[in-house]
Length: 580
Ligand code: SAT
Ligand code: MN
Image 1: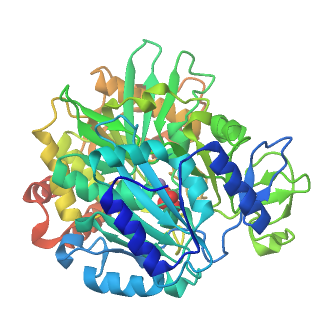
Image 2 (image 1 turned 135 degrees about the vertical axis):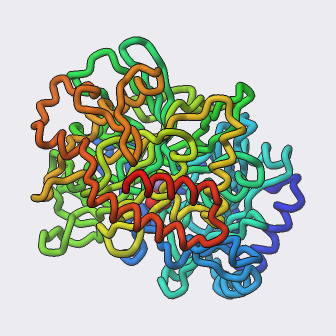
């Protein structure tokens, strides 16, 4: 197979010359192609068949033990001017970056097959969708891209019609972390990634294209590419609202996107539009509308249970690729938090021994089609997307951040998003549990200078007829003994309920220096039985902690120097003054 698009033909030919594969395969996305890839990987031991009676069409992939998470220190934004990448990114000169990485690509596919993977991010007929082509030598990547994107012939047809696509070149190389780089060339709309087979580093449609490259494109074209879930909620009054939420990796986006209303809240309905990435546009109706560019979920497995997320638990019982989980004696996948079974083999393939750490890797993942979600909704395919009523920002904060507060207006909302912080998780290589600033949960994913990104966010004030209300939430507050103060999961709907009532102009809130907070009477807490002392800590403003917090936010914002928008600096000063 080949294509009528000359640029694509030439790029594939040049890449083949550089990487010297034995075969070239143009992916169609067909079932036969998938079956053949599964067969090939089973033969090579790259996939392990799980119990087909209880987990039909489920397979396990074990990645190299040194290749289990994103590598932020090896991820670069390569713009002509260093300042355009900003202090939030690692930067390399584009010419130097190409030379460095091309030297690693030279001959790297000898004896391997080069797969050409055309894909579309977003519903195939959506004017907001964007296409790309990933060249990879990893059949695991092809199988995952087939689930995570609209991959194959239909995407190729759209590329042939439109003429444009993002170029992504990927090879697992020799998997040596010393020869691992994830490089982005936003000005060329291209990506080069070598030395890793792990999700965020290797499925180039996901973080590399749909966030880093797309955020850059979005700025020039007047839209937003965000690390956000999109969830639809209907309350017992029959009011429907769509909410987008930005949370860092492994902070509960998948669970919130698939939330199941607790039994004590009858009459509520929740459905998923997205659980990781949202592309937001000013729609023809003047509202901010969101599409989910992805077609599947690449979610954290540990902790998934009928109690925490029954939808996800059911969803991953068939047609699922597992990466780095443990296995039981019955050949079923196993992970910490799974309520049945016992692990006999750990994620590395060794006999399980508690002394060696968890059985499943803390960042082990499932890959499934979004259509398998019991809370799937066909609006995920809507070309214009869904109108957004509210945006939530949130992270993991043991202390300081209350359960929920509302920004007083859009400017304040941008400042709240810019100042947000979270404890690091196993989704990226490095220390876990360290608080860091993670503006809009985009620290690892913004393809340009955060100062310009904040200005871009502020610019929506004049562009959108009805701006979403902005909230900050925190499900992760702990008491002094390290116990979570809030039950989370389904009960987060109680916070969403208040958010919707605020959007409808119904619920009460009181003004504080950091924004509008509910009193406990303003929240629907029926059937929750939370001690008053917990509620008090969750909804209280710890002024001493906030004085320290606001100073830290100030120091962080100053890293952006003169490029920081004056309006954001002024907003910061306003909040600081209010705190006294
Ligand atoms: O590794 S991914 O970037 O795909 C998942 C995540 O960290 O959010
Ligand atoms: Mn993510």
